Image (cartoon, rainbow, N blue to C red; front, side, top):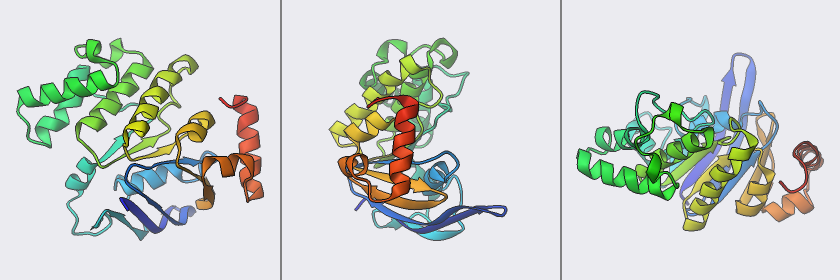
Length: 248
């Protein structure tokens, strides 16, 4: 077991955003979290990376308790990649510099070694020819692929994706999903929050449906899509299919 989340709670003011969330993730597995907006999905990812502090509950990455006050959080974050919906690239740095910065500052690589690794990851996401381009010179899809390359370069045990296509124009979504599908096939462990039901159905080993801070239902894609056990899961999938159309 690579990741274990146990009884996680988070409140903002008077609102309970997470209410006892528990699940696990095995090495090489892709899990997709779906559910209505504002139901705690992004907060859950941020708690796993300790960008947001949970109020209660425990999280383990292999044998290390992430939620322990004694944990080296910078070391943990170097092992858990995070791909944000709004890219989070440094606008004053080229694609190459965005990817190699962490290798130099966190991993302690030489500039030469970091450059070689960064170029390899940019090639992996199909952007070797854009290494010297700045974010403003790239499309949204290209920027998101740079952010994926940046996460991959750190050689993480797990990558968290927080609605990675939600800020993209429809014609650019496919290029990002194709990279993510390739990562899943290669054995990368991924936890993905998304509304892309076609991706979820095709790539996920398991789907988690969340609403109002709790896990309502989880299971293999075919089970959830063909015969969901909970009426709310069926209603959500019907509505989102109507909204986005067909199988996506």
